[in-house]
Image 1: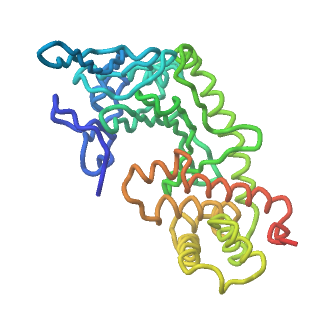
Image 2 (image 1 turned 30 degrees about the vertical axis):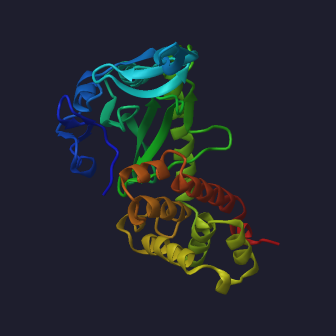
Length: 357
């Protein structure tokens, strides 16, 4: 299975760590206990800095004289552009503009520490670097839970952060709830707020990171709203036909397929899509996590069938592709959001959500 984890030739280790879980692709470091931020930086091989350096280009000039033509090579500075360079290996990571502000790896961890006012409560679970170290990612678990029902159906609260050193993207912090019993990532954007904060790599980026308490406020408000919504959904009954219809609509890949669904032209729907729906429905009917009081025959169960399909059933090229799909705005996140919106409508209007006239 392919991977893009950074290999540090200086240390002879892959730049990745995880707590207790099997390391990515069997590479990287597994640690027994949750590390501090400084320990996490060491475990993940992120103990390097990035510098901005003048960007130069080579030019050649030919000078004619009486005997021959002399070729002279010179270097010219490229105005307003800089190379970002990893200081421990002198590896060029990217080309950026003059306004680009480097956020060092240690500053990214400081962002997490400041979210909960220090090291108490923040639990670093994974961190690593991709490519040559131009992109890093961190996942950390926050204190407290989202609880659904009166039993053991609890969802842990995570914040996922990724940033790049090559100018390719903004600093992104995403609140990502994960349901413990099935490891489903219950991503959703509510009507009045998003679960993602993006910070541009400008001169003010570091100052904006210092306002990390705003992200904690987002996580708290978001989780409080989701807890209320999920508990309401756990009380709304759905039969098997309704659950399958919600799954079908949530997973619908394009407008053409949706038109076939609306008109009842089942024969025109692709076999691939039909199989996808059947796999997700089978997960809804047979998974142990779908047989709980909160999920069996409920709207919350229908929603979890979609998120659980992408987390536990669907195959991915590698873990990076899975991460992209579920957390970084890929197919799984888009379809899970659609499922969230459909379930919200079903709670309000019931089976009228299936009335396409």
